[in-house]
Structures are given as C-alpha cells and as structure tokens.
Length: 347
Ligand code: NAP
Ligand code: ZN
Ligand code: ZN
Image (tube, rainbow, N blue to C red; front, side, top):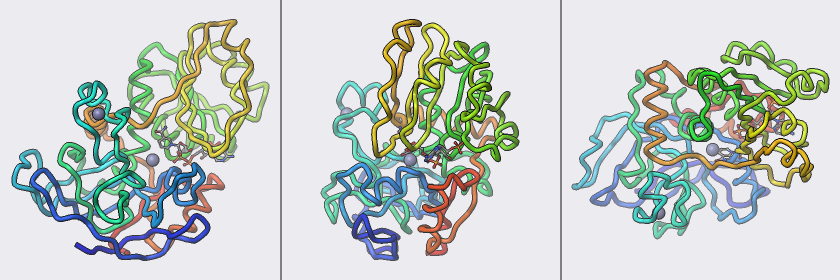
C-alpha cells in the first residue's frame, strides 16, 4: 500500500512530502489510519542526524494516534474502528528477559518506530508523519480517552511514557519531592504526571516566561535555573530530579539539590555530552545519576489508562504537515506550549 508521508532524504534537507510503502497486513498485524502525530525533539535529532546513524529516507514520528482500519486473522485485542496509539516501539524479540518483564524498550532486538531495522521496504522503519501504519498487535495501545481529546493524547505515547516510567521506577508519590528540569514536551508531561502521582513538584526552567504556565500545569513551585540564589534555596532537598533538557548543561547545579541517596535521572538526549560532573557531588551524599529510555508496552498502557482516568492530556498546538520545519525551528528556541501535533488530514 502506497501512502503519503513527510520525510527527508538527507540531514541537511528539509522535510517534504513523499510517498512510502506500507506492508500488507499479516496475521498478527493491525493497520492504522493515522489521525494525529506528536512532534518529539527526538524527531528533530534523528531527521538531522544529530545522534549519527540516521538512515534515509527518514520519516519521523512516534507519537501516533488513529483508528484501526484493518486487522490480521489472528488479532483479537483490536478491531476496525477502535481508537489506538503507537509509541516508539514497533517490534522486539518477545522472548528475552526484558520482553518477558514487559520492558521491550530495553530488548536488544527492539525496533524503533522509525530508523529501526525491518524487512519491509526500504529496510528501515518509517514513522508516523504518514497516513497509515501497519504494526504487530503487541505494540498497539488502546485509547480510552474521549475521541475529541485524541490529538492531545498523541504526546502521551512518547513524552508521557518517557516521564511516567522513571517517575514510577524511582517512586514519585506522596511525601516525595520531585524536580522536573526543562519545561518542553517531556517536562510539561512530567509535571502533570508527578503531580497526579501525589509528589511535591518543583519545575526548573531557563525561561522566566514559563513560570505561570508551570504552576498551571501542576507544579507546586517554579525555579528559574539561571538564578543561583533560587537554586541554592533547594539545596539537598530532592528525592528525585527528572532532567529532560535537550542540550548539554551543568549537571552539578542539579546534583547538589539532591538529598542523601537522591537520584537524578537523565531522559534528555543531547547531541553532545554534558560537561563531566564533580565526583564529590556523588560521594558526599551517596547520590546517583541515572538514565531511562521511554517505557515498555504494559507500562505504556498503564500510563494511558491512568491519564484517561485522571483526565490528563498534553497541552498542544496543532500544525499542518507543511509547517513541520517551522515547528522544528520553534522547538529549538523553546517556543512551544507544550507539544506540536501534526494533523495528518492536512497531508
Ligand atoms: P523540547 O520540547 O524541545 O523540550 C526541551 C526543553 O529543555 C526546552 O523546552 C527547554 O525548557 C529546555 N532547554 C533548556 N536549554 C535548552 C537548550 N539549550 N536547548 C534545548 N532545550 C533546552 O524537547 P522534548 O521533546 O521534551 O525532548 C527533550 C529531550 O529528551 C530531547 O533530547 C529528546 O531527544 C529526549 N527524549 C528522550 C527520550 C528517552 O527515552 N530518554 C524520549 C523522548 C525524548 P525550558 O525553557 O523550561 O528551560
Ligand atoms: Zn519521542
Ligand atoms: Zn526481547
């Protein structure tokens, strides 16, 4: 099946309309008519080969929501007409220890929704900036939010799960003080989810203009991280800090805000390394620096169900497909409140 998509042929070229081929629906496959796709900063890193290893043509997009168009003979969990989502994973080995635990995100055979190895043409996966996608049933999530919220659900499939998984793993909840660094797509979801889990939430931003928004999103306190005095007031007080910043920066400024045994988890994936942190900031209080990558399929469903139950969606700005390059440039300037979502009908 040939469908319309937006992608690029090289790191230095803009995204443009292109035709791509989707495989025939197999026995365990679900064919999805894509309605909306969120724009993640990872899409920009990948399209412009900032992490190296991008395969072209590159069609980004891993915050996919839409309607089931067709299912294979053995599919029982989904049926035509259902509202569904696909996040960052479209395949994995399904028999290793990680897959058995529902942590497909850490499987050596994990296949990303774009730039992953596949037998389908052109030999690597092509993402959600496209009209249709065909995905193995195991990686298709159920959406129970009201249909009118569908576009604002899309960002949950990456920004939502990437913050939910570490918040759950490191125990964000009542009585815990949690910092969220960087109020972008991931960060704004981190605030909403940490708040809904019952933690005391402090938002860290470089943008004074986001102070009021961060409070509305659910932060109990907001700190402009360029203000050394305001930072110092939180010294040695955090159980967990989730750092979503997409650029290299001084980690020590945040490590010193952790209490004894506190952890800072990095989810931001900048193209260049952070300056090396001071070892004494770990030794002196048994602190940890950690990382976390998206989340597994069961926890993604758990997060979607939690969000539906608590009325949580992303704050979005809808774009037409041809506005994608402008959206990327605005994202680089931190000028997005708080996630762009592409209306696939405009393709
Ligand atoms: P985003 O919407 O662009 O948000 C990033 C935020 O970081 C900005 O809004 C800004 O917040 C802050 N920031 C501060 N200085 C910055 C600078 N010099 N350049 C860019 N941002 C700066 O990006 P996102 O979609 O949330 O993604 C954030 C990062 O997480 C990206 O590197 C992305 O690739 C990565 N990511 C990782 C995973 C994972 O599995 N670990 C999953 C998805 C995305 P303030 O204005 O508040 O300072
Ligand atoms: Zn993403
Ligand atoms: Zn596996």
